[in-house]
Length: 417
Image 1: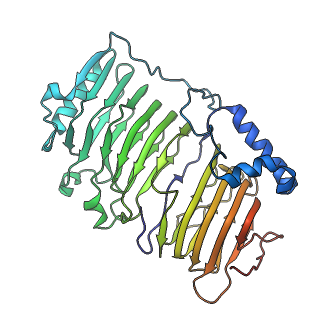
Image 2 (image 1 turned 90 degrees about the vertical axis):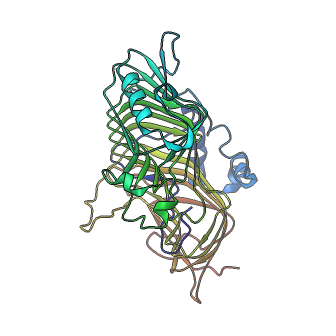
Image 3 (image 1 turned 180 degrees about the horizontal axis):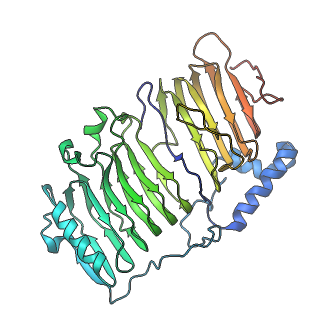
């Protein structure tokens, strides 16, 4: 996704002031941390077992990224009861006139079903295994009690852009809803082609949004062909996200995976977001990028990028913990989202700029456990590609070019093969 010239490649965006992200159990994370800490002081020969798992490419984070009820790493998580009692009222959108034929406008049926479910003592709102075409909907709370939304079929956005005239930034939005479970194994299709052929910079529509909500579970869903942003959590608290498949075709411009903004206490696991593995990028501004705002907390960890080919990409490999998209420079802050345990393997191609690898990490929370394995990025022209690495612990395995310099703020020149 987002492979057009001068567009951004954003597989996973973190733009938030208060955030927690972790995988699986504390014990496993501590074990990985132990290996990374040791690797920062010694070379790979000292700890062959850890580095052999990296070289193998199949076992590095095996067991770390998996569905798990273990949320020890979440602080004060007032967990939603994911089980549904036998006394819960089942509210099917079909009972309110939804046709589910993929062509009829089923918006009113969803709105009426939501009104009933939200006002019930305990309810399960169901979209059965059909295809429902719907206009923008705001599912507003607060609701009377805990609520489950089961999407078994497919929800597809209206292809008439005039339907978005009242709110062009949201399609499905859950607003101020607490104790909510959204699941079901179905699909949410943003029908984004109408946005892609226009300006995605102007119409930053979000396919699925959770706003000012707390105690959320979002799991076991496919979100595809988002208008611009597939899933967004904004001003939420206590969120558990798992087993989401987020996809869009290669020529969809600037389609983002997950946005987390101004949200506290969130756990994201076992999610597949677009093509991180096996992607081919042509003429893009950014290739593999992790960016975070200053002032955040928590961590983004256990991330792998592999088997990626780049051609004339301005910023092929980039970690930016000082991201700021404002005209006035952002104020420097001490706190930051910690970035650690990131593997880049088998990344090859050309850079449109002098700097092919840039790790601009926080002074207070340096990037730890960054692994570069079999990297070959040459300058698109006749210049030599360089690496700029600040406040980062990097380990190189195999042939890596360009290399991080021995002294921060400088360049290490190597002749790429």
